Image (cartoon, rainbow, N blue to C red; front, top):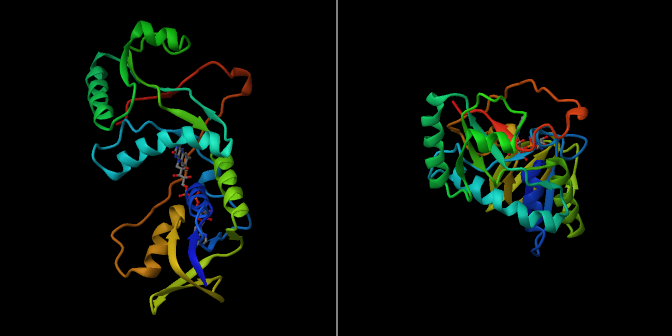
Length: 247
Ligand SMILES: Cc1cc2nc3c(=O)[nH]c(=O)nc-3n(C[C@H](O)[C@H](O)[C@H](O)COP(=O)(O)OP(=O)(O)OC[C@H]3O[C@@H](n4cnc5c(N)ncnc54)[C@H](O)[C@@H]3O)c2cc1C
C-alpha cells in the first residue's frame, strides 16, 4: 500500500515527487514508457515563460508567474542550467503597438516584474540582428531558458534518494475506489492500493481522468508541429527569447 501514486514521470510528476519526498510518505511513480522523462518534457522549447499572454486572474496566469520565480531557487537546489536571457515581444508596425500596450497592461495585471515597452532604438541595441523595421518591443526580463529534461531528471534523482520508488513499463490501465482507498491497475494485470493519486500524465491526463469520473468536460487532442533548429555556428546571433505578438 502506498501513500501516493504519481502517474507519469514528466517534469510535473518528477517535481511533485521531489517535493513530496521531503515528507515521511511512501511514494511510487508509475511510467508507461521504458524510460523516465520521455514525453513532452524531453522535446519542447525549454522556455520558462514570464506569463504575459495569459488571461489575468486565471489559475494558469497565477501559476505561470509563480512557477517562473521558483526557478531561481530550483537552480540552486537541483544545480540545473538556467539562462536568464529575458524575452522580447516584438511589434512589426505602428498598428501592432496598440496590441503591445494591451499585453503590457496584461503583464502588469499578472504581476510580472520589470516589464516595460522599449522603443526601436533600444530594441536594436539589445538585438542588433533583428529586422530594423520592427518598431518596439515588450521587454520581459523574467523570461528564462532551462533544460527541462535535466530539471526533471534532477528532481527524480532527488526523490529517489529520499526513498521514492519509480516503476517504468508500468502503464496505468484502470483505477477503482473502495473503502477510502484507490486501487490502481498496471498493465491490465497487477493492482496496487494507494491513499492518493496525483495524475501527471501530460496529454494522456484525460484518459486517467476518465478512469475515475464518468463525465469529463474536456478532451485533449494532441497536435504535431515542426521546429526549425538553427546551426550551432549561429549561436549568439540572438540573446533573448523573441516572440511575435500573440494572436
Ligand atoms: C513542441 C513543444 C514545445 C513546448 N515548449 C514549451 C516551452 O517553451 N515552455 C513551457 O513551459 N512549456 C512548453 N511546452 C509544454 C511542456 O513541454 C509541457 O507542458 C510539459 O513538458 C508537460 O510535462 P508533463 O509532466 O505534464 O507531461 P509529460 O512530459 O508528457 O509527461 C507525462 C508522462 O506521463 C506518462 N503517462 C501518460 N499516461 C500514462 C499512464 N496511463 N500510465 C503511466 N504513465 C503515463 C507519459 O509516458 C509521460 O512520460 C512545449 C510542448 C511542446 C510539445
